[in-house]
Image (cartoon, rainbow, N blue to C red; front, side, top):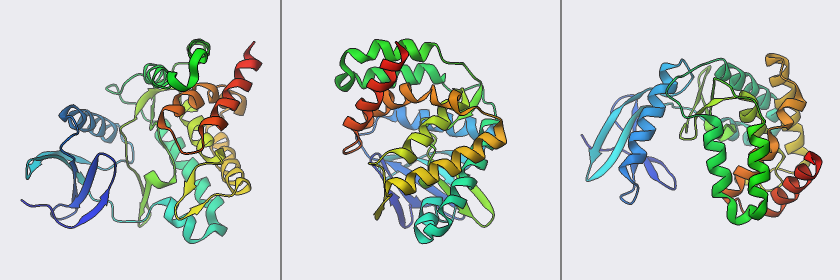
Length: 264
């Protein structure tokens, strides 16, 4: 079987049409096959946990490239819908919170431990954190454990709507842990002055409004305390440094320094 029309591309792979109701994610040749095996395991685990994720159908080889066949989700992202009608952006943030709360009610035994991944990401940010690494890791260890399915990179561009169905994609950072860590990361992305929504950038006040809509609904549905979410922001910010979002480093470091000072 040959791949059909190219429908998307990223840093590690391209996505093509693949028969009826399916797509194939073809990795570039320089990507280790371990990545494919890991994505297969994670994608299967979250789907079987009842999470609203695309079904995984298996691995393939196409013209010497390794690939993974997924259920096709034919619909726009929540981000695209926000950009199409910014007057409804807060409504879509509320939908995002409802979906996030639903995900966090799920459990999956085969996902990596959240704190292990967070600690790894903080250490990968050491070139930027310097002597802040150990204090951040100390604070991380004081935070709660958990058993919820967590996405690890939950934002409007990773949620697709097909009809009335919302489906979450890109589960490579999925983990099992405290859902408030996941919520803190989503909140930090809304608040960052350097996260853009192509082709537009989010004005600071818009990001704050979207964050408020998201947090208000998430806390209403889950009973979460905002102060408990806030305690996760320090390790979340430190781990995010490794992603090197253009312009964001100084903002994150200033935030981390304020939080570390408050911990003394």
